[in-house]
Length: 216
Length: 216
Image (tube, rainbow over all chains, first blue to last red; front, side, top):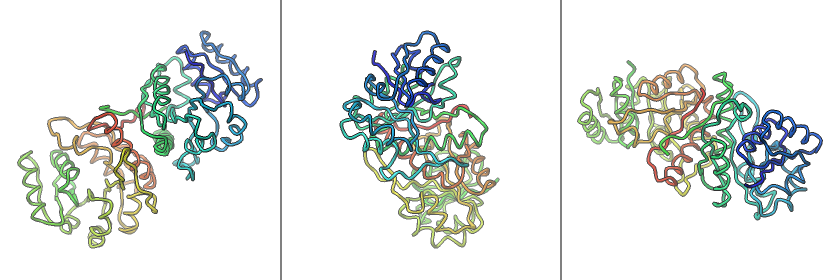
């Protein structure tokens, strides 16, 4: 099975994806700026779910080792974290979960000149990296609660069709239904939907509102 | 029950909403630029579903008579159709279903300087009109097929909370679940979701993909 690296993997969304993908049988390489922190979180994940093949490393090692590299980093850290990793990511599938969120009631998204966080990422990483945008609206709360089966749709956008298929398969393997949302520029819509869903969680006092597509 | 006017009501979405709201018991006033055409379509609707209280009139009369006025007009006709109706709409709830769609594969939305079609409408009509944005992703195909029960969610955005409640009730009365999506500016997200759903219908060769919110 493909090795999945998660860069910035020690936050809630990174941990949640590590848990779910690891439990589905993928070897996980969890990256953080500090390898100590990554090791600590990897151990926590192993304690929570013994049957996971996971290792904590620094982000650079994670970029090198993953067949697929998932980014769960803040939008404002894109440049800082990724500039040193560009060469290591060359040719790989990089999955962006980032939303350029402006907190508020309701939260909104920044006007990113490139169109969306994922399109900005493509510019930072260059055209030989296969950027795929996915997993935005799947809340960390849902990912981390391993007592509950994960379900729901996740929209997947990208310009490289085979890379998009790989990410759709990852989604399907953890119980979600990956749906092809179109080219990478559609990510601007996916990212806005995330802000919408966060706003609805606040308004309806919920934690895990999701978006499903019917009659597909 | 509140009288519902539909301006530009002779297109597929207008007819579909007239059918569903009429069948739910609301008196319907169907407006068109030409009252002859409105009368013809109103008669067709009566033939399709005998139990509907519906009348065809010109758009000006429809604007005057409706307690709630639904717009199913093309984005590019907003100014032409609505400038003459401004006074008649003063103080009323006006429901905008418009998307500034750019056809294509995938379809996208225009960058409307006001933020969205609904926000542009609010500027055109002035601040004493209660603009509510809704019913975007409910396909005409689903609305018109009266053999099938309508179901699914419709997101409702607006700055006037009581007006938004009225529109949520309209949605609920025809079998949908109206959800409060937030202030009117969220309409930019709702309108983009429509383009996304149209693109998914093309990609998956479907006609009536819908968007549902889970765990609300």
